[in-house]
Amino acid sequence: MQHPVMVFVTGVTFWGLLLHTERSTMTIHRKLVVFVGAIAVVALAPAAPAHAAVGDITTVAGNAPACGYSGDAGPAIDADLNHPEALALDTDGNLYIADFAGHRIRKVDHTTGFISTVAGDGTYGDGGDGDLAINAELRDPAD
Image 1: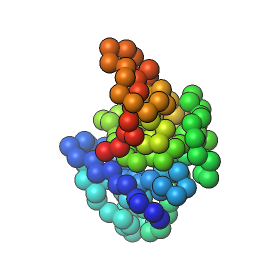
Image 2: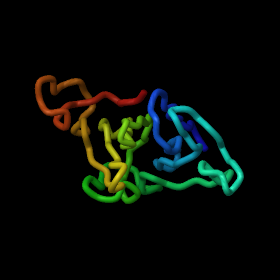
Image 3: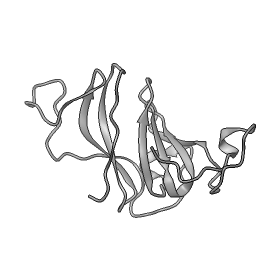
Image 4: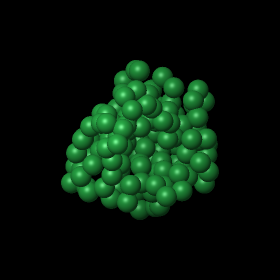
């Protein structure tokens, strides 16, 4: 794995999964179990409520090896990403992706698994103040 990016959730109470991106394949994977806002376990006994098999990786967004921009309003696993760099989760469990080379912020809906663009029009820059976030220019969004 090249340059993994980890999301550390703090102050949020929910059961979820820690995520990381893999730059070489443009995909986002689930990695570690998270609960009550902290990293809890990598693996527990199979009967435990937070069990996750060691080495078990599930893609949640990105259509590797494709690299680019596509997929809005469709399943996140079918979307093209362009060097995802950072991830964040909101209190509803929605995943936000800083798509570094795509100059966009993408959102994966926790309920549907569909992806959408919430900020950035794909243009490298800093224009767009006073307009909708989707029309803004972004400069390599990351952490």
